[in-house]
Length: 234
Image 1 (spheres, rainbow, N blue to C red):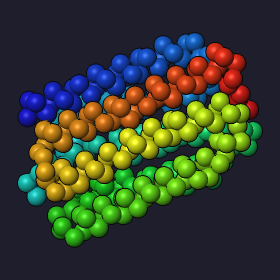
Image 2 (image 1 turned 45 degrees about the horizontal axis):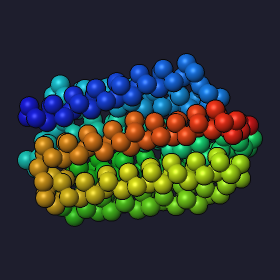
Image 3 (image 1 turned 30 degrees about the vertical axis):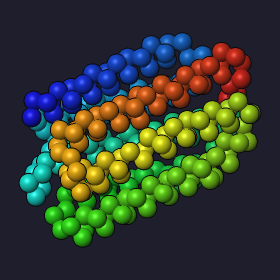
Image 4 (image 1 turned 30 degrees about the horizontal axis):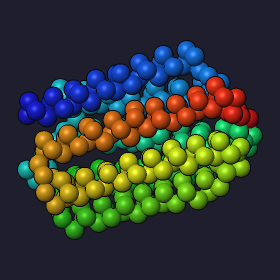
């Protein structure tokens, strides 16, 4: 348990460092809209809070002899929509008319994905657990189809450097998010190929990369465009 707690505190420290970095960057915005920084700061603050709860022994329950961290899903149901909003900001900075319907569909599919994972983790019947997992995977495919379909089409209407930035950060987020269903199905929630400590470690390292790491890449690209005078804001 001590090893698991140590991993959770590593995560809390990484989130605190990420939030501090974004606060510092927000003081010199490099023409990047303030909303981008606010979203980037909110993600690690909310996520770090719930991992601190888990590190202190809360946010968890025993299901069929395995520890289920329901607090992860409380984190994800807020932070993953925020990541998608940040991605949508990057893809529509230069557009006067924002595709809010697409953003709404993205968030809706994402919430279905997260809640499916939570209900699967809380289920004891194997058929129901895997059925809900499959529903979550379908929802993730919908998220990908929206990212690379209509949202990318909107991003391509921006100046070329901004459209390229969208493609880069969308690809990075898409690759990182593949790790979540893979860890779930291979770990204690699914096939049980590794135990709780490894599961916790992976669900520390991957979210650090997909939350703080991705936000650093996203904001760095936008700040670079701003310094070069290539960032257009409608």
